[in-house]
Amino acid sequence: MGGNIAILVLLGSFFLMVFLRFPIAYAVALSAVLCLLSQGNSLAVICQQMVKGISSFSLMAVPFFITMGVLMGSGGISEKLIALANACVGWMRGGMAMVNIVASYFFGGISGSAAADTASLGSILIPMMVDQGYDDDFSTAVTITSSCEGLLVPPSHNMVIYATTAGGISVGSLFLAGYVPGAILAISLMVGSYIISVKRNYPKGDKFSIKNLVKQLGISFWALAAVLIVVFGVVGGVFTATESAAIAVIYSLIVSVFIYKGLDWKGVWNVMGDCVNTLAIVLILISTSNVFGYCLTSLHVPDMAAHAITGVSSNPIILALLLNLILLILGCIMDMSPIILIATPILLPIATSIGIDPVQFGIIMVLNCGIGLLTPPVGAVLFIGSAVAKIPMEKVVKATLPFYLCMIVTLLVITFVPAASLWLPSLFAR
Image (tube, rainbow, N blue to C red; front, side, top):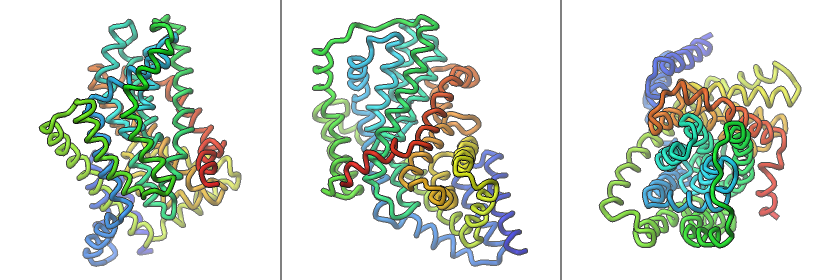
């Protein structure tokens, strides 16, 4: 009976604080405190579990990847990647929408952040698209949905957080697993954009030119090489994810300051200040979520949730859809990192029991969380897109509806076609 009361206190207080719009780190920490007090446990457990949560060598990769992304994003790389994307797909009907989607794929491989993608590319592309005759809400919808490619395309610090939380999963395999799903999402969004562009008669860009494509590839090479260093260094066993992240920071600093000259040393100092703010949020979330996870585990909530979910049906297809539904609902009320930290220990055992590989489930979880970033009431990327475009959020949501459908189709493909996630990792594992 006491255990049931503690579970009610833990989950009840947590969801109440989430709906009251408490910062998620405080909601997680305070609900854990109330749970421990209700059981008469020592609050020293909180300090022990918080330190344990961030005392991990592999987690050191997270601050490095965030720093790399901010340096690259501030170093004048956005314009070069947009020019490269324009050379690839700008000739199509609705060419600027296609450029937006492809540029997000390139930029996501550098920043690993949907919010950074929306803020950086959106501030350039949304006004550019509006000037060329695209509707402002359509331009914003394309920008925010394509930014989720950055969560799948490596190096993504959210993948590192998932690998650490799940335990025993190769970061290199997760990195490789994201490329094909990211490409499927891009193609799906491009099909949706093309249909809308034809219907609304949006303009085409300049004709395709091999010469221009080669030229833009040469200019963008230094930016794209950062991803190659990280991914192939980790996959090839040259260095760990943490070491590759540290090397990537030094490389991105050299590229931004000396090659592209988009940053001076004063700008670098300001960028480091932004990184500290982001890192403080992420590390506080990780440490407090570890306390919350400790409470969940000690109360056997993962086992109870597993029994409840598997009790609904024994059909693997129904259970896979149910796992996606749970993650989508969580995405509507919580940010990405806490969902990964809290839901992974509960849902991963259920996923593996129905034959979903842990690496594949990581991709499924990340895409679900990405969709959550675009849904009210806690859609951070939705708010950023609305602010960048200076249009009401309701208008953006309405324009995004067709793209939600594209993202759900991609999610179903990733869920029910394991090869979409596992083909590349298996290829390099041989």
